[in-house]
Each structure stands twice: as C-alpha cells, then as structure tokens.
Image 1 (cartoon, rainbow, N blue to C red):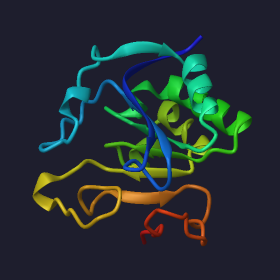
Image 2 (image 1 turned 45 degrees about the vertical axis):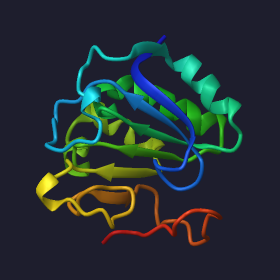
Image 3 (image 1 turned 90 degrees about the vertical axis):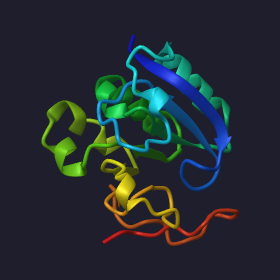
Image 4 (image 1 turned 30 degrees about the vertical axis):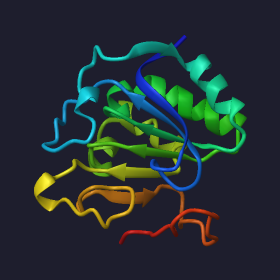
Length: 169
C-alpha cells in the first residue's frame, strides 16, 4: 500500500480551485519560495503518513467536492500521488487540480513525475516569486505561475458561486 505524508486536509474549501474541493496538503518542499504562504509544509517530516486508500475513502465520501493536491509539493511524492489520482479518476467523476513549484516542462522531463500528468485535470505550475506577487490573480500568487488545462480547453460553463475559469496563453 502506498502512503502520502499529509500536513493537512481541508474539506469543502473554495480557496483551492473552483467550487467546493477536498484539498490535500502534503508535507515536503525543496523550492523554499521566498514569501511562501505555507512554509510549515517545507519539512518532509511534518504531518503524518496516510494510506492512499484512506485518502480515497475521504474524497469519495464527499459527493459535492472535487479534489486539490497542494503542499508542500505533491511531485516530491509523485508515485503515491499518481496512484491516488489514478484511483480518483477511475472510481469517481471528480476533477483534480494540482499546485507545484516545478514547471510543466520540468515535470515532463522526469519520468517519475510525468506519470501523474495523465490523471490531473489542471496543473498550476512554477515557483511563487515574491517580487512579482499579484493579489489580483486567480488561484496563483505570481504571473509566472500558469494554470494549465492538461486535457483540452477549460469548461465553457460557469460553476455557480465561483469565479469564471480563464485559460492562460
């Protein structure tokens, strides 16, 4: 069984992507972005180990919420997050958004990390750059970070109670 080092889980949050979401914040990040909003997630020893099966059960129990992977950085635990993402997509109709300090190009160049991409719907990539901080941006802190729809165009219909989705060029 696979395990993920989890710092926190927020259920029915609306801050981590559009609509209600179950956000899994993992432990461990080497990017150490200056001004990070979650520096307690940098330690790979923070939080606790959780079985992928237990996380899946928690996600499936909330019929209203989609899923967000954040951290820390989920790509430092790529194998277990890939297993969780695969199971979510095979067993539910939920969407998965994932935040990472790696760029899409860095992820694609690493076979271990790239294995997660087919199972994600949206990747928010790139390190946060404090000097470029922009509080007007949706779902990201600096303009170098991209919201990438991995499987085609963003949905054209608005999700009630959320901001419209925007595709970056």
